[in-house]
Length: 559
Image (tube, rainbow, N blue to C red; front, side, top):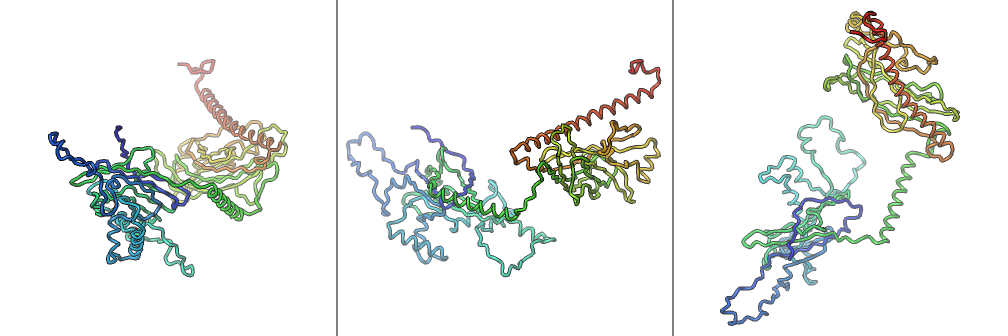
């Protein structure tokens, strides 16, 4: 005979179901492994003496009508919150003097009806529902840890007194608030009393009376087989989990005569009939339809659409932080420059802004100013000439970082610019900044004591200004110094009829967007090449400033 494989995992399992919990059905099978029935051994010399008829070992019915083999094994199907009385409850509620609450009298009536109809269907397996006293005591005595010497905290004691039940929602008389919604200055006692979770929860316990055959109905022989908890969100917690393909669970009783029991728990909830599924499908369809109508009523019928051939760019941005600057109390002035051709914005649209003044906070080796300053703007791109192969330009975000001291003197800490992302979505951009400097110690002393420094008259000079029409933009003689960085977080949305049309207009618009993305990549490559040119120019100027005897005819340094 194969050895039984026991299931040792008795932890909780969590399920979620959209079906009503009243359809839940569990099959519980309980069986005794060590039987109390045995045969007396007789010596071989007496085998032929006083032969005992085997009929004497035949199990005899008990006074209650149950046979002993019925106590060895039991199987029953239990529904959600189905009440199965134990022998202890049957004996208790038959005495009318023991009934104290309306629920006790209700149980007494049900037990009397069962006795008149032939007795209860269960023998050892019974249940405690959400309304029974056992559920209250179980929640009150629930332990938070597995330590034997656990001392409950104040919060544990408070939670033990909370009946996590579905409360009836009663409206307030006249709509007048009975208490303040916000307590601006809560006391310590107020915080302790309100730090309690009151989640609607229903509990059910499946129990077993594992006492001897003639001693059923004693509390000391009661054991918990399974605990089920269901909340208002359809979350079902089962402890232990359904047996399924695992081995059965085991229970070893204590006392003078130890016995071993095994049991299994299976989910035997009936499947929904096709008619019920169709009815449920219609209900959900109607519900979703009503919800869609509700959302449509909130949005309205006048949904703003762009003109054909136009692209609408909507940006929700945030100036996140600035770091790596010399002085404290920073603020950022920023604006968006739209290209002069094909781009426009509404007349009421503000394309610039100034953040609040923010003190810096040490973060590693740098000092960081966290602004979290939100801004938003929208712009329109209208591509009239689809046959043009020129790369369209994309808006540029400029920023200027300044510092403010105690005497209200400001200093320019850096300038920076970045091309807005050409693809929709969330983007985090880090902009490196620089500032113009003067040679000599006097300029730095003036900057420290008096404030003020060299400034750009036109902030678009940070890049190539959109109004510049020449072939080359000379920055010869401009001395700069690298300063810190500014972090922007941009959420870009694009709207166009081309995204929902399948005509040739969509293909033309798609080619425009591809060229825009290519322009963004080309712009970044152009910035890299421009940086290399500046480095090469500085190296050339350094060579020209050296004595001629240190430079070879090829232009390299000689030792």
